[in-house]
Length: 264
Ligand SMILES: NC(=O)c1ccc[n+]([C@@H]2O[C@H](COP(=O)([O-])OP(=O)(O)OC[C@H]3O[C@@H](n4cnc5c(N)ncnc54)[C@H](OP(=O)(O)O)[C@@H]3O)[C@@H](O)[C@H]2O)c1
Image 1: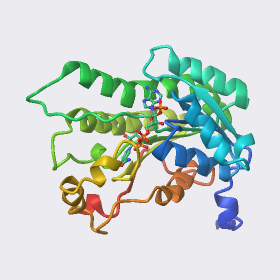
Image 2: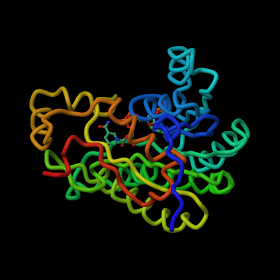
Image 3: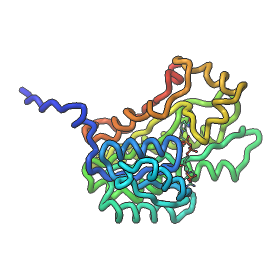
Image 4: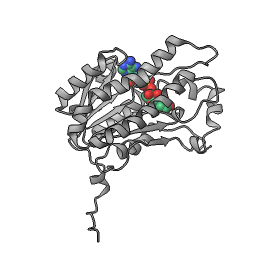
């Protein structure tokens, strides 16, 4: 005979009031959106990126959320940066419950024209710096009791690109998915879940020129079952699902938000 757990309203299920979050890549695009979504749900958020003026401009644009948005300027490609960011974020927030890793860079090119410095830069920022920051936040995430790590991977962490070689980027996002799976197994006994979002194409500084290109845009669209690219706000609920304390039995998963791109 099992006792029935109390039913919670959607508001209670997704409430992040008082949670402490670190979001990298928060100065634009997906990371900016995810930082704002967490703040709107009640979290205090340390937004990490290199461009101080962009972080300030986001706070100015959202005065109602500004008290919960803190800016941390850092170049995560610098070897010492992830540990320093983690230390300052924990000082500001008094701990950490959620880490969202959205900082990333593109990397075009094929393997025939193998470009070692480019591969290293892309893998370093898109994978190693993510692991390094997560590692530096392990103790506060463990102490939280509801620690959540959410990496922003990509559909290119699940499949290759068909409209042109993108080897460094595809390799990095597959590696990030691998990192997530390995870390999920390692950190589950400590009460920390580790998952990944896998967005398809969303218009951002990284992608807008491709999506709007009269040749490349339609080629990319062909694989979309829904026949269109994503809208940034369509990532909101996927993020809240993975960040919510109520999502207590989900770890090691990749959640595509892709308009049916991966079903093709
Ligand atoms: N847009 C898409 O279609 C799409 C699809 C799937 C996955 N993604 C992934 O989503 C993430 C965000 O990309 P986006 O599309 O939103 O592009 P974006 O607008 O160009 O955002 C990239 C973010 O990463 C930050 N960043 C880059 N290098 C950094 C560094 N060395 N140190 C600290 N921060 C750094 C940038 O901030 P600063 O320049 O201020 O440092 C910026 O906030 C990336 O991981 C990307 O791979 C994007």
